[in-house]
Length: 241
Image (cartoon, rainbow, N blue to C red; front, side, top):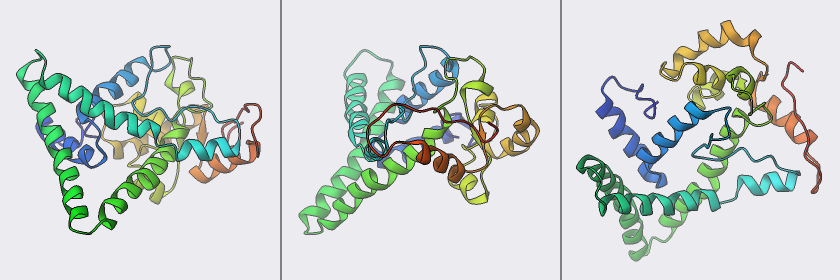
């Protein structure tokens, strides 16, 4: 919601909250927001490129499990985060952009320093727990949440009712994903507060091509269609098919 400036009425509060929420996972809020808005404007075209690319279709169950726990994409984001911010700071960019980069690096650097100091004090379990939570919890869970949004949809179609999937879900999954399960509606109305997407979903659900009643339904269907070992790609359909 901070990416779309809808969490708070004032843009500055959205920005502050976004930076604070992004710093613990070493992600640039400014870079994430820029790339995410690009994704919204270019979806259904060859120029579309999401910030987190959880859309590659696996060939087997083993390949899918490897993709979930693959740390490379997140590591690349972290490296690019520091490289991009340092480039802005030492370039001829506007002062406002430089200040944004300084603030982002300061917050994340403070977290890294705290982890280093804790390990020097003999509490090596604290940085280990932090890294495990980042790469073994956040990264795979985030992958599982975002993967169904466009996977197996007609991503070359310009209509969001064709290139995006919505999952109705229950109270828990809707709360956990912050209504991001209603992804078609989110693309149709990106500036609407996320909790206002529920009544919209109820009215438009019948017109959507790719829908599932739950994440369990999507992943059960997906997993059963995957081959145990490496094999050919397969096609998965919505619950309507």
